[in-house]
Length: 508
Picture (tube, rainbow, N blue to C red):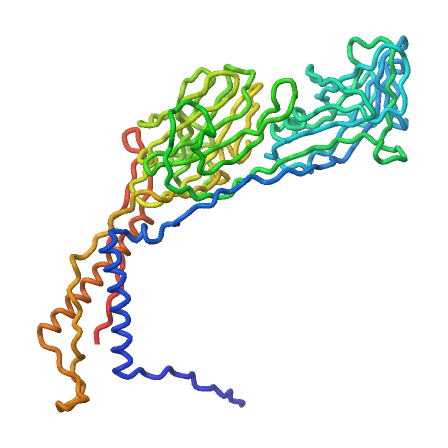
């Protein structure tokens, strides 16, 4: 039988009495400094630990993507049952024999949902043109599927809206609105149909297709995007200036975020929506702006706040404030089933800006969100709903998270009134005389024995330090045990009152 040698576990040397007393004095000095600092400055533990400043995040920069071409073909009314996918040219025109249309589909999966579509341009290189009826053409969305077997008789249905083609060295088409619908609206990407304008009588535009020996001559879709920054933020205590008038960007910005918005009417330069936040220690201010919707009856600006932890379904901890195009304000509360229900919450206000541009300001008392004191962490989102049509939304961080609070931006408000901490009265002065004698005799090296008064003052001092530490621990524990609940139509803060665990000095 073999035996395993076990080495003895090294033991820490037992400290002598002098070392123990030195440690005890250091412990007392450190805690005396904490108690006196809190007492003299009037700060709470939260105040001492609060973040002294905040960093304003900036939106991501723009970058350009060449979207890959997945499919290209054309259909010819003169041969209505013949598929043209094997041709190495793309035709768009009209003559006595009929009309030709080109179909294109690009892979937009390379663009993340929630991207701001800064610009998008379709470019077609014309190998040649013929005819005398002008060079007008237009581009529309395909609304039904198609593949390489497509013919004139099976060509896809197209959207009634179209964008004119600008002719030049490359024929180009601004497609920011269409790309935005595919990327951010959930519209299925079934491609594009390029067809002659209704005024064209006799013209053929013959374009290079994806097999062209010159890569730059192939059909291309170039998209410039800007990212959305949904990262967490810390908001310092600043004033909420100016009147509540629905105008954003009037010096009231603490944190600003951008989200996808509509191109301006007529498919001109796209405009990004904007979401701004600030607070003045009592009120949270939010401003949501974007491009004015043409669907005035449905156009709504909304601001959402969650006071709970990370959760995917809106519940009683989540509220959504709204202002529609007519200036009517409303508030909803999560219904625990993924949706929202009307709710009554006192003290908040909202104003929708009148005129051609959309903007809405919201101001919400922090107490209505269940806040009482100390730093406050929330989750927030912004929505511009039904810009052009029903279900046509814009949102921050993105449209898919409008009813998913776990994906909203997390913000922490600092510079708020601190929670009061129970402090002991002026702590007794600790004894400064020598320690109790450890031996006999009264020589020069012997420590003087404490008097009964010194002992009493020492015990009182240690107990005062204990009470201050217990109060600080209780404040932290109470903050962790607080929760927001609904009581008689409003959200209130409920905290349990269990006694916290307190560390005691070991008695010898």
